Amino acid sequence: MSKKTGAYLVFFTVLLAGFYYFVFRGTDNWKVKMPVISYVQPFSFTTQDGKPFTDKQLLNKITVVEYFFTTCKGICPKLNTNMKDIYIQFNKEPDFQILSHTCNPGTDSVPVLKRYADSLGVNTDKWIFVTGRKDSLYQMARGSYLLDDPKNNVEKIEDQFIHTQFFALIDRNGKVRGKIYDGLKAIEIQQLKRDIAKLLKD
Image 1 (tube, rainbow, N blue to C red):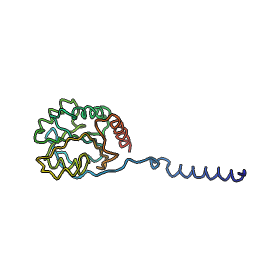
Image 2 (image 1 turned 90 degrees about the horizontal axis):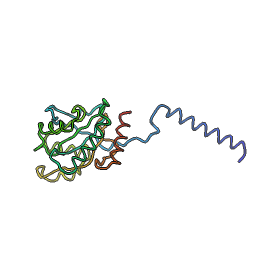
Image 3 (image 1 turned 90 degrees about the vertical axis):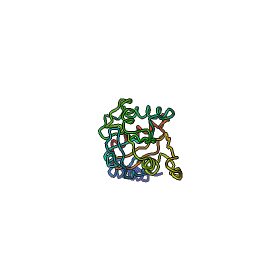
Image 4 (image 1 turned 180 degrees about the vertical axis):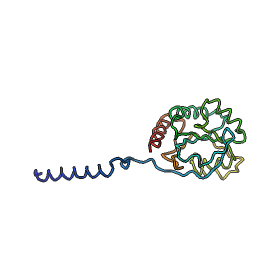
């Protein structure tokens, strides 16, 4: 290759690099974005303090969502141990919150959720526990958060029971982002933490 050809290659390489620098400088356009996998549909539930909690209260917040029940002796204690680890890391962030839905509203009344929240020793302005109609709770799990298979809706609601180990991550615009995270796996909890941090910076 001649010196002249080599000089042209260097020139165009520098020119291309300069172009990308000025186009993407100060932006995150070069980064891989977390995919949007679903959208939160309208809802209205009741918190551990007996107050309404709606989809509007997800806006402008980064929210981690789960389903559990207070009398669970299986996966729920481990799930909420991992969730508390997430809470400890991010609860000082003003735009962060956790939303835990009961999957057993027949048992998990407002006072029961209050006692459960108190037992965890958490700030319930940051980690909110909600109950409501079973069909509405389950529809949100399946239709919005993708935490359970919608095909399970074919059964009568009184015969259904969601017992899921998965967490969902919601951005400030009510979009479900990233992936569905396995709340029992340490590697996925770490990924969830990284993704929370990314969304908080956006």
